[in-house]
Length: 278
Image (cartoon, rainbow, N blue to C red; front, side, top):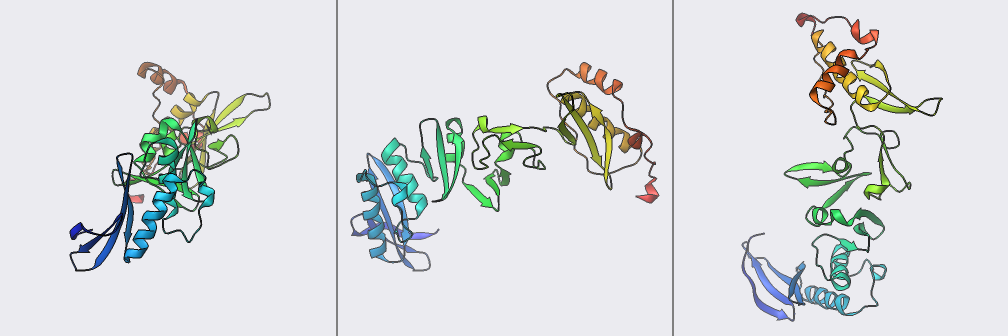
């Protein structure tokens, strides 16, 4: 926001008159506590800015005030309440609406919509604002929208309840101990067998889902999906498949597994596509 003569004229304690380039006058509220200068926002009316200043000061001094005390008519937005009360109670001012607990922190999207994270994620989320679209949460990172689940190794195409789940049933609890990933790789689905063990079923989509095979472990299943891609591409299929990156084994072991894997006849016998039929 372009302006001139910003914060030159104090009209109330904690309130400064400022002027934009187009001549519009507005008022900025701020306060300083324990050597920390905190901006409280901009207001079109000086009296509103002063009310914001007084409320900000009250939040920092009145220990009986909590986030539950917030009311929609407050001169400060709820996000600023969270920032100020965290500063008061924990001694750290964070620009995002984060309140720190002993073993976790809370990120408030609204008074009634709260996400939970491990403290080790505090640095990241204190500098990345979380946004919400429906039941999807994301941040802007290097100019791109990044989903929160992708930060924890969950693929963008993953289906909740199938590919991953929240162990305690709370989809707002992003602590690592609460996230369980069932299917890490493209095309791989982990299912329970009758003997109590797990099998890994692999399917690939080519104008419908084709079975690649069923395998004893996740690594074999991931490599089988890659092998199916190679077979299909040799037959002229140009779908935009994504290979699985299998990093836990050496290249020589990968090659051994790749060669030994059995692929379902539907893939092996898939008709070759000539360039004229693309």
